[in-house]
Length: 119
Image (cartoon, rainbow, N blue to C red):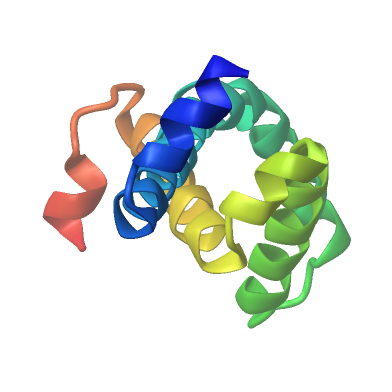
């Protein structure tokens, strides 16, 4: 009851500002958590999806289809609440980054940025 009395004394714009700041902070923390824990947790599964896409789409010029397949499947691996924060565009960038890492490892057995040097 005392909390309600205290809240009644706080001006409405200040109360709205505090609630908005807490909402933004919650979204930022959830995004950072998803980025660090959730996405790193599915990296190995994404590698498996890349291999599956390579076997499903064997014809030349199907790179875009492979990428869309992997992104669609990878987003499906995320929990529902995380899919709200991780857009398809974000997932495309992440999958492309991981794929460049795989190509870098395969070209000379080391992750040393040689793919970006040659590109």
